[in-house]
Image 1 (tube, rainbow, N blue to C red):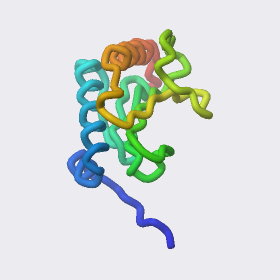
Image 2: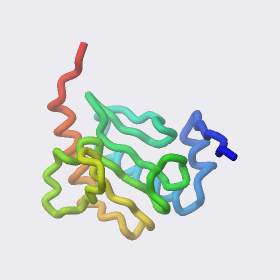
Image 3: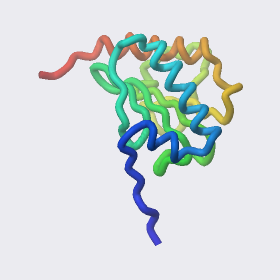
Image 4: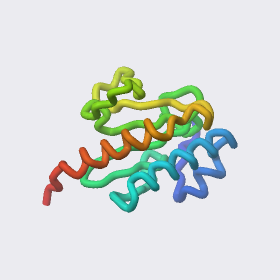
Length: 134
């Protein structure tokens, strides 16, 4: 029997769907991202999850409970062009995707805010260098 496809029309629907711990992690990661981007780019629901983009894709937050997350538990925070970030402290995991580098958080305590905000700022600067095709 196939699973019914879930399609969220808003962040409210997403948060109502998520287990409490994933909802909290997702909310905090969204707040950190929004504050760090400080008005740069936009957020939309894409692949049923919070997705941030400017000239191109910047990052996404993918809770494990949302179908096609690729993680068994926690919340996946991925940088779309993670392979182009310096990540001097090796904060991000590389996995099998050569482009998207990420961190999977199981609890709020695992979030290293200075490391994450530094990477978000670096990803934003990288995105500013991408040219928009007209």
